[in-house]
Structure formats: structure tokens, C-alpha cells
Image 1 (cartoon, rainbow over the protein chains, first blue to last red):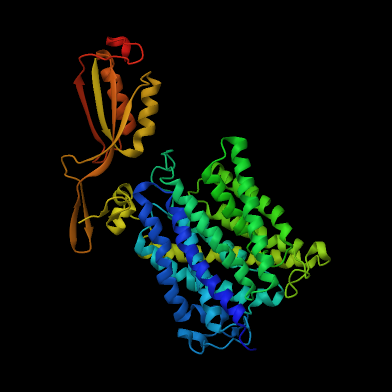
Image 2 (cartoon, chains in turn blue, purple):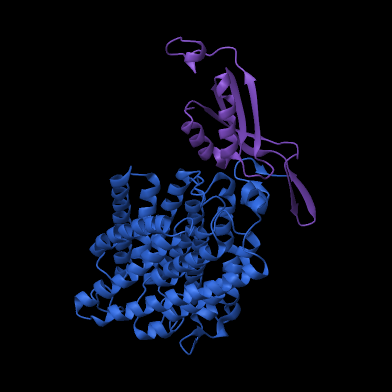
Length: 411
Length: 112
């Protein structure tokens, strides 16, 4: 197919917007940790722009989107972006240069790895995190992306994930939970030491950048610039708004309408609508956004009060559970009237879609949890996942990076 | 009247505060400080390079109590702030000549 310049322009802009989401996550997380770990938390996210970007170009794009090998993984045809050029692919995004598609997808890989770090802040050893990230990207992100978007078994089965509710949010959320269990809690967590956010304005700044970037994430996933992108754009906004208002009200019921809550609620709504944004009517963003915050809020409370898992910034509750619910919601609300390339859900006469969605969710949960467990244990046994107690007490900014958020480098 | 000045770890404020409160010492002043003790900070190794982190962030708690309350208050601070490792902090006790409540002008023991 010939190149459509409007589609190309929109996908390139979307890729740049999604790129900005990773610094957005960095600030969203950074503001939530104690002052002594602010920089290290920013660094864990920001470094993925470098590390995962390089791995994506080297082999990640090929493993994810290379010619299908048994439904499991892509072939090595695109290693080093070999043959990925200015002409469109015959399979993916056929109206834009394949390079634009590969760049857009690269930003998804980067932010997914960054999302996991919220579970392990304030205690993970930086060098071990880098090794874990590289292995996780290779052994979890690339295969799941291939299954869902690259012609793998889930896609062949008819499983739907518009912009990454499964590929990004379930994998990151479930892996965050597994890694947090292996790593153990922050020093003082069981003793009830205060671990209050050091800078809530930064959290809000991060959430704002994320919300902005999410239009690229979801509306860009139309891979065209027409009606579908516009529909996904509006659906995304609506779900973020519904999530923010719902979380605010929930917080108000128990205490006060907190700034941290409204920021978290917006992210919950946006994460949850991600898989469904291009398959459901925009107004369906309202119930999905409301449900996103109800689920995130109570799952967070459950994690904190009923378990002893220090999944520090609740990646599992917000992204894992949100992505799961959104992916399941497609089975009910998806409509061919919105996206002819999609499928109908239960409410439009195709009850079987619920089962397909459930199969995909179960498979990705099990795979992400199991693989993360193996990789996490492997890194822990070989190089150790945690910093020493002294380093943890001093803070990761100084012990891992030799710098402070306020006051500059140490000499 | 005595002033107790305790330099403690930042994360130990909550236990110290609640232990002091349980004994009835409600008034206190908190300051963020940085400092070092006899061991001159903490040695860190970055590759081959040795590095000494000399000033560590701490909290200073100031409480003014009656003479006979000094030892229970000091014990409460120790119980709340102690980890047993280097860097737990120090407590200084000094005499206070007088205290005045600004609102009423009351002075002496009634003002603390």
C-alpha cells in the first residue's frame, strides 16, 4: 500500500508523545518516595529510554514483530532493524513506513519496563535492576507482544488488546507483584515506619504528562489518523476523567479528597481503558473509568492491609488489575460499529469473546508471574537484588548514584 | 527545668513521638539537621574509590521537662530511636533558666 502522509504524521507524533510518558512515570513515581530515594526512582525509569531502546533496535522488534515462529515468538529477520525501512510493512500498519511503526512500538516497550520499577523502589540494587530489565524485556515483553500483536497464538485466537492493557499493563503489574515478593519489603515497612511521599506536586506533574502522552498511546494505536483514532482519543479522555473523579470521591468518603488520589485515579482510568479504547463506544469510558478506580482503590487497600507484600507504589493494583478489568471488559462491550477490524462482545451478540479474553488474561498472568519469578530469583542468587542495609538507610540516591536530588553530586 | 535535645534518625520520629506522648510530654520542636558523630559519617566504596559520606540527615527533637522527668523522657527517646547500629544519635541535656508562655505571659513550670 502507498504511504499515507496523514497516518504517518499522526503515528510519529504519537510515538513522541508516548516517549514522554516514561519521564512522566519517573516523576509520578519519584514524587511518591522518600527524599533520599527521589533521584534513584527517576533514574530507574529514565534509564529504560536508553537500555530498552537499544535492545529494541538490536532484537526486540524482531522477536516481537518478526515472521511468526509457531505462534510463540517472532523470527530474527529484523535484527538490527534489517529490512525495516521507509516503505510500509505488508502486515502491520500498512499505510505508514515500517520505521514509524517500529519507533512507535519501541516507546511501549520502554514504558512497560519503567512501570515495573514502582514495585521495587527504595531498595533494589541499580546494577541488578538493569540486568533484570534486560532479561525481562527479552523473555516476557517480547514474547507477549508477539502473542498479542505480532501474529502469535492469542491474536490468531481472536484475543483483543487495542493499545496494551495486556501487553503493557498486565505484564508490568503482575511482574511488579512477583518481583516485590522476591525482593522483600523496605527496611522498616513491617515496623510501621512512615514512608510518605516527598513531593506530591511532582506526582501530579507526572500524572499530567502521562495523561497527555496517553492520547498518543491509545489514539496512536489506531495506526491511522481518521475516525478510529478520534474515537479512541475521546474514549481515553473520558475514562481518565471518570477515574480521577471516582478516586477523589472514594478518598473523600474515608478522609479527604487527596491530590495523590486524584492523580492515581486518572492513571487507573487511563490504564484500564487502554485495551478497550479502540473497540468500545466512547461513552463506555465512563463505566470503565469508574470501575477502574473502584478496583484500584480497594485492591490497593487489600494489598496494604491484608497482605505483607510491599509492592511499594501499587503497580499491581492500578496497572495489573486495571489492565485485567479493561481487557475483560472488551469481551462485553466491544462493537464492530466502532472498529470493523475488532470483534463484537457479549452485548453485541458474541458471548464467546468473553471466554477468549479470559484465556488471554489467564495465560499472560501465569506467564508473566512465572517468568518474572525465575528471572528475579536468578538475578537474586547470582548478583543479589538488594542493596546493603547501610546503603538502604542512607538512601539509593547517594549509595547508588552518588548524587542527591537537592544539593547535587557528592565529591 | 531541663531541655532535652535529641538527635535521632529521621525514620524514628514516629516511635519517639508516640512514646513521649504516652508519658504525657506533648510539647516538642522538630528540626531537620545534618551532622556526624565520632565515626565521622559512613564509608562507602564506589569501585576502587573509597568515599566517606560525612554529614547524614537527622532530626533534632527539643523537649523541655521538669527536672524529675528527665530520666523517663530520655529513656523513652532511647527506646524509640535505638536500632543498636552506629548512627542512632545523641541526647544532650541542659539546664533551662525560665520558660514563658507567649499567650498568657505565665512563666516558670506552668509555662512548659
